Length: 254
Image 1 (cartoon, rainbow, N blue to C red):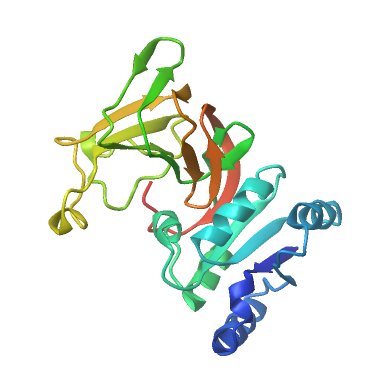
Image 2: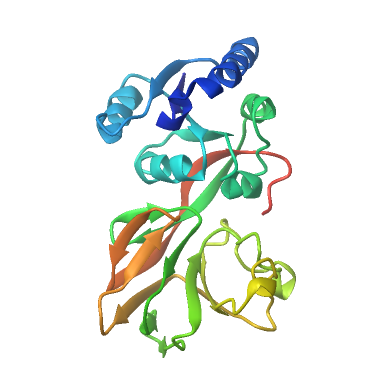
């Protein structure tokens, strides 16, 4: 049984035609199901708990990366498969998972290639892609073995999926969401327009794999998970191996 969760931005009339095509395609493929539209007034955690109890086996997110990341943090608590139909421009996670846009994403759902992937966990919040820390100097304590104190003009990301603008150091040995590791990515902040679209490589960045770290700072600094949820330092971060069952495409980037 499928549960399709529509982001609230899809209530805009301009998406009516798109949603009609998606729903027709899903029905033709035999993977239609219940449809719920997300809203600030609806408790999504309670909804998922009830629907899983009622037999839902697959949660399909229809929206963008922000929508997907929001649902992942909740879906990680259940033994369900999670699918994704990306809409709009903010779909970097979809690209990494090998999921094309619009109607072609329905074909990926129907093919049902399921991979178990790792999730990161910062305090009590799960994240799929990455978290970032900015605004001041921090100290990173790595598994009680050593400490790293990056310079203030560096950007610090904790990554599970490969950032799209990062070249593959070590011939792709990093940023694999199935290797039981997260990576600390420390890179110089962009210093001009020419740097905005330049790939970060192993020559000008540092990558440190780990299973568990703590991040501390003298002043409380923002910690942003998957570009949306803001926590504050100090935080503890760890990898949770094989936590999520996700439907992926054959062109996935891992």
